[in-house]
Amino acid sequence: NLLVLTFPDISHDLQLSPTLVGLLGFIIYAAMFVITFAAGWAMDEFGRKRMWMFCLTAAALFTGLTFFVHNYWQLAVVRALASGFANSELAISITLVNEQVPSARRGLLYSIVQGGWPVGVFLASGVYLLFDRFGWRTVFLLGVVPIIAVIVGRFWVKGSDRFLHLRQVRQAALTDDKAALDRLM
Image (cartoon, rainbow, N blue to C red; front, side):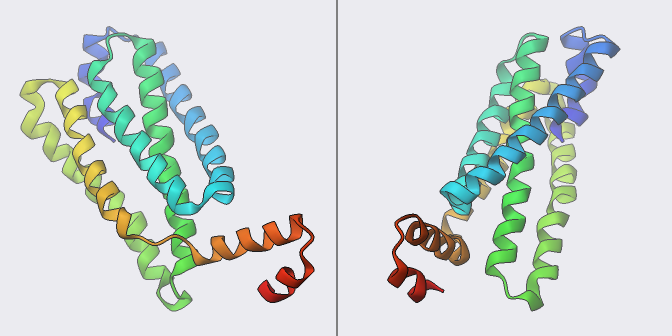
């Protein structure tokens, strides 16, 4: 969302044509699809919480690296990765909510998860308005702060019991351990 807010300044500084701006959107949305798809596979292989933390950390890293871009291709790569990992975090969040929260509370919690991004855009707009005089690069550097706060807070989120159970079932099936399969089922 910081990209949308700062795009006029970025386009001016990097002298981006309308064609390059359109291509940038294509690159970012393609990366969002590919990275989110890969994150879905990876959360099934390595765990929801582990991938959640990885995606948040990568989103923070590439958001901060936007401070250092000086040409179109650097911008395209850094923003595609930042947006892709940030988008993946939502898919992982939904999975965790669905696996850990009793069905009677899922709607409210999912609404909080989904409703958080407009609050983030609102706050990002405020950051942009307050720090615009320092340039668009500084806004991206400051954009790392809320992501780091979320990463720290999520260390207290437990891993998905359902994922751990499914991993045990898969391991028992792969090793053809019928006793373990009977116990787990």
